[in-house]
Image (cartoon, rainbow, N blue to C red; front, top):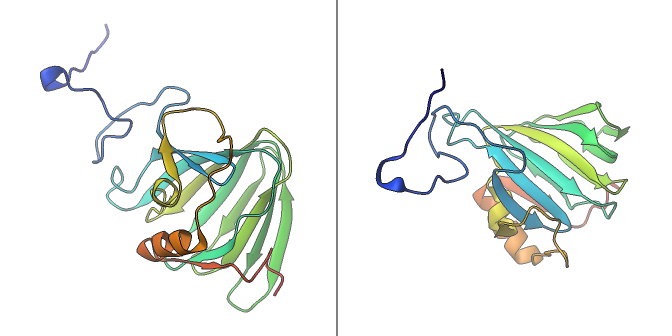
Length: 182
């Protein structure tokens, strides 16, 4: 027995439903954005989880560290699916943690902690989860895309655009710190 679900009016299904309801995504589906040299695919947003968490993938080639930043009230995770990424985290007391994460490795950034990361191998893919959801930041700071490919050329927003969108998502970028150099 199979079940089929039909949308009234023959409307095209959006990648994410925008409300807490069961759904499935096939490989590569989701809300895609290009930001810097990365393809970010949102699989689940705060809209589908009543504000509790979001889930996304971050695919990128070896490159520069993203700008150091913090999320006021969002916890973030890094789970390496392929490749490698070096993550730096500074806790509330100023102690810095650094780790090269490889496939299967996991990292956790508590809310309020400064952090950054640098992709260390081409074909790196990271699964990220965040509490409270900031996942729509990527599409607003970058550019939305239907392409499942990495951006060519990279999409580099201005510091002003990045800072404005960050404020809207209760984040702060520290362009003066590279990477967490104190």
